[in-house]
Image 1 (cartoon, rainbow, N blue to C red):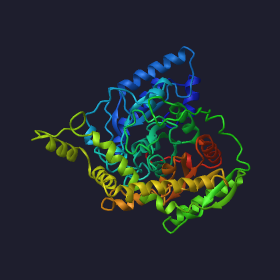
Image 2: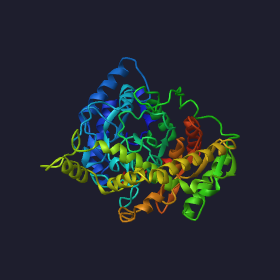
Image 3: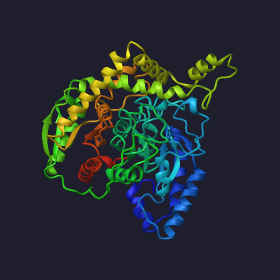
Length: 483
């Protein structure tokens, strides 16, 4: 049962080959057996899962149907879940039980999804390796000595290891797409505003976006269908009709214009990954796509702009964690200043502290114009590059990451090296565009992803291209040894 995709689970439940309760018990037992190797979960919710599974089976017995009704999933541990610990991978929130469900959690629960638990993540979603978590590093099931990517590495590792078919994740600078690439999954970052951020603990509010991680584009379409939609509780949510993402999966790619930016193939890209990307381009050409070289001239400025904007917003968002209202509080504070300093110093890890400091500096008097304002101007130039490109092409294709997953601890003393791994993904967040990573092959036994970007609200087109590619390749079907 653990090898079934979301789509196969939906068909199996509809045909009464097994019940949601039976499937849930199998997966909970598998998590108990295998997750100690991976550390992909922070919290398991066995009682809730079995309760939801029984309720889903009862709904099906009463004639209800639905692709997510009875399907087991997990949530990245920054989606608030009522009465369940929501830690954000941080000591600061180790004892925090959310008093309400995030909109994404509530929507998926209403659709009948079964929550198996909360997955590990980089602390407050700050990282590209899932090494900054208070609960320890997550390991990549393809090679336990390597990182699974971040910040959604727990969700990615759990799905890749067949502990469950799909999971929610979030993407601020590539944190869905990069772990998908590192673990041989399909991961989709929707258009900014397509999925509600209400109840999703914020890192950088103008960049954060929730989305699905699964093994196939078909499964991502199913999970996104349950997540997407306007939410009046979220001021950044966009009131745009949600199409049936599964309906367009089998559309022809004949005549589809795919742009390949020349800037993507610079000296920083592993040549073995470049070869795999070119192979995927050839495969799409066989399916009728038309390939064109394009240019994104301001891409080189994206990383410095991102690492001003994101920390600036983080320093503002994380100011609420002060040891007074909720979260970690230091013992025996001498006065209010001591309470603030020690609570934050003890509650936040080194990477979070580093980004808060950078952000506070960028927003400080005398430096706001020089750094934050200039970074926002670069953000507009990046967006303009994409808008110009999309007058010539329908989709932009390139590598998801410049290198395969690195060894755990390899970048511990060089955070800049880790930041540079986001070079291909952060532009979509700066521009608010949808992006998808899909499996494209292996380098030294480690998975590699190809990234697709589309105009606003064209998630269906991304899923269509990825699905057609997956019907004609088998990379996404490979399973890590031992899982």
